[in-house]
Image (cartoon, rainbow, N blue to C red; front, side, top):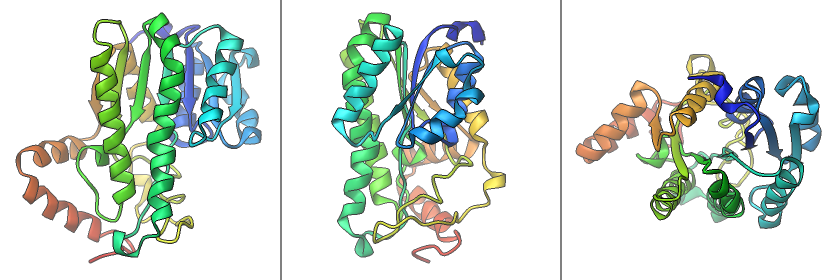
Length: 273
């Protein structure tokens, strides 16, 4: 990969205040890209600007709640106003959950669909004219849960499956327009997503059930994302476990269901055993 590929490209990253989003913003910034950081906390993003680029004029921070349509429209408008176009949109903002459906307040699933799925739809819809003009790339971060369902994560898996279906369709619609559409499935990554995951009543979990130190780093995920964008890939799955799970789900679905059940049941304080 040639990092110069990203120099002066306009890259929007949602969920850019932490985890994969922040790591991606930093990486693109180090490559000389013009980075647009989108997240709900404007103060946090502004404090992170020096870590993204040594030239603050190449970074734009836009307070954005991706579940709000007008926020997403404003994000695109502000980006084009400052930088004149869009080359890459990384739909990274997302929230997870951990609870059995039988115990779940339905507002939790609604929240996950609004943030994960509708956030991707809104940002992609408003950025699309500019991405078509630049023959750029749109990315959806879907996770392995967007290919093979995870128990106690009904809303999360449903939203990630929906993102994959949405983006696969967009890819086909613009097959002859030069648009690159990447469905990106990182697998388990060390981040705040599990600590912020919603429980049955919609409150944040607060603790992670996994040993985060053993998971892939957000920085490594960002680097592999950049490589996939450079190669204009349409689908990328990370980790051996992730690839094995998707393969098994396709050819041995009932076996995969049992193995997934056992694997998730081993988590600390699992909602089921």
